[in-house]
Image (cartoon, rainbow, N blue to C red; front, side, top):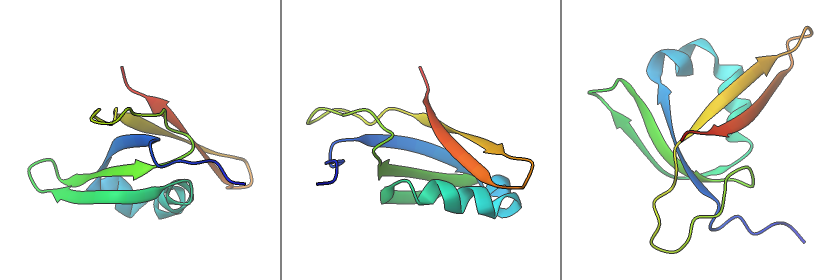
Amino acid sequence: MSTDISRRLGRTFIPYASLVADQDAHLAIAARGIVIRAEFLLHRNGLEQIAMSPDYDVVPDGGMPPDYEWLVERGATGAVSCVWARRC
Protein backbone atom coordinates (compact mmCIF):
# COMPACT_ATOMS: atom_id res chain seq x y z
CA MET A 1 0.00 0.00 0.00
CA SER A 2 1.33 3.44 -0.87
CA THR A 3 1.51 6.43 1.47
CA ASP A 4 -1.51 8.76 1.50
CA ILE A 5 -0.18 12.15 0.40
CA SER A 6 -3.53 13.94 0.08
CA ARG A 7 -2.77 16.27 3.03
CA ARG A 8 1.00 16.51 2.47
CA LEU A 9 0.97 19.90 0.79
CA GLY A 10 3.61 22.48 -0.02
CA ARG A 11 4.02 25.68 -1.98
CA THR A 12 7.08 26.50 -4.09
CA PHE A 13 8.17 29.35 -6.30
CA ILE A 14 10.34 28.64 -9.35
CA PRO A 15 11.99 31.56 -11.15
CA TYR A 16 11.49 31.38 -14.92
CA ALA A 17 15.24 31.58 -15.55
CA SER A 18 15.72 28.48 -13.40
CA LEU A 19 13.03 26.57 -15.32
CA VAL A 20 14.80 27.30 -18.59
CA ALA A 21 18.38 26.79 -17.39
CA ASP A 22 18.04 23.53 -15.44
CA GLN A 23 15.24 21.48 -16.97
CA ASP A 24 16.73 18.11 -15.90
CA ALA A 25 16.58 19.12 -12.25
CA HIS A 26 12.98 20.34 -12.56
CA LEU A 27 11.92 17.08 -14.18
CA ALA A 28 13.51 15.13 -11.33
CA ILE A 29 11.72 17.34 -8.80
CA ALA A 30 8.38 17.03 -10.61
CA ALA A 31 8.64 13.24 -10.36
CA ARG A 32 8.35 13.55 -6.54
CA GLY A 33 4.93 15.18 -6.41
CA ILE A 34 1.57 15.97 -7.97
CA VAL A 35 0.93 19.62 -8.83
CA ILE A 36 -2.61 20.62 -7.84
CA ARG A 37 -2.32 24.35 -8.65
CA ALA A 38 0.17 26.30 -10.75
CA GLU A 39 0.17 29.96 -11.67
CA PHE A 40 2.72 32.03 -13.56
CA LEU A 41 3.24 35.30 -11.70
CA LEU A 42 4.26 37.94 -14.21
CA HIS A 43 5.24 40.45 -11.53
CA ARG A 44 7.70 37.91 -10.05
CA ASN A 45 8.66 36.32 -13.39
CA GLY A 46 8.18 32.79 -12.17
CA LEU A 47 5.86 29.90 -11.39
CA GLU A 48 4.15 29.44 -8.05
CA GLN A 49 2.75 26.01 -7.43
CA ILE A 50 1.05 23.98 -4.75
CA ALA A 51 1.68 20.26 -4.84
CA MET A 52 1.20 17.05 -2.90
CA SER A 53 4.36 15.09 -2.11
CA PRO A 54 5.47 12.44 0.37
CA ASP A 55 8.37 14.84 1.11
CA TYR A 56 6.03 17.51 2.55
CA ASP A 57 4.58 17.78 6.04
CA VAL A 58 0.90 17.08 6.68
CA VAL A 59 -1.29 20.21 6.54
CA PRO A 60 -4.47 20.14 8.64
CA ASP A 61 -7.86 20.88 7.04
CA GLY A 62 -8.17 24.62 6.49
CA GLY A 63 -4.41 25.14 6.93
CA MET A 64 -2.17 26.95 4.46
CA PRO A 65 0.55 24.91 2.73
CA PRO A 66 4.00 26.00 3.95
CA ASP A 67 6.68 27.27 1.59
CA TYR A 68 9.37 24.86 0.48
CA GLU A 69 12.62 25.39 -1.38
CA TRP A 70 14.25 22.87 -3.68
CA LEU A 71 17.80 21.83 -2.91
CA VAL A 72 19.33 20.33 -6.04
CA GLU A 73 22.61 18.42 -6.07
CA ARG A 74 24.34 17.22 -9.20
CA GLY A 75 26.77 14.33 -8.82
CA ALA A 76 30.07 13.86 -10.66
CA THR A 77 28.28 11.77 -13.28
CA GLY A 78 25.66 14.49 -13.80
CA ALA A 79 22.95 12.60 -11.91
CA VAL A 80 20.47 14.91 -10.21
CA SER A 81 19.18 14.43 -6.68
CA CYS A 82 16.63 16.76 -5.11
CA VAL A 83 15.36 17.31 -1.60
CA TRP A 84 12.88 19.78 -0.13
CA ALA A 85 13.68 22.24 2.63
CA ARG A 86 10.80 23.85 4.47
CA ARG A 87 11.15 27.61 4.79
CA CYS A 88 10.59 29.03 8.25
